[in-house]
Length: 221
Image (tube, rainbow, N blue to C red; front, side):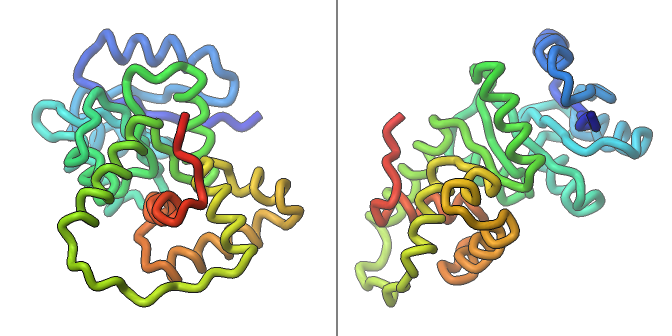
C-alpha cells in the first residue's frame, strides 16, 4: 500500500503529539515531518520532497497558516493543504480557502472525520466539517440579505447535473457519485468542472452553497 506522506503544522506540541498518535494508527498515511509554524513548515518542505499533504493550523508564530498556505500553493501546487483549526469563524474559513486549502476541519473532529477528510482531499475533493459548512451557508445567506435585489439570470441545469450537484453537497466523492449514478469517475469530474464554470463558482464549496440555495441538499446533520 502506498502511504500518503504528511507534514503536521501546529505550534502546540501536545496537539501534534495527539495527531501523530491518531494518524500513526492508520496504515494509509505516514507522518514524514512536524513543524511548529508557517516558516518552519516551508523549511520542512524543502527538506522532505516526498510530502503530499500538509495538515495546517492557522494561528501560529512567525507565519500563520494562511500565509503559509498561500506560499505552499504558489511554490508547491501539487501539495494538498487541509486546514485543522479550533476557529470556526467565517473570516478564517474564507481566507484559508482563498489561500488554497482543499478542506477545513475543526480540532474537535473525531478521528474518523479527520481520516475521511484526508482521504477526500487526497482524492481531489474538498471536505468541510459540518460546523464549517454551516458557517459557509450562514455567510452566504447574510451576503444574500444585503446584496442587490436584482436576481441574476437563472442558470438551467440538466437532470444529471442536478443529481451530481446533490451528491456533491452530500460530501460524496467522485468515486461514490459515479457508483450511485452508474457513470465513470472521469465523467463525474468532467461534470464537476463544467458545473464550476457554469455556475461561476471558485471551487466545490461554491457548488455546495448553490445546492443548498436551490434546495438540492438537506443540510441537517
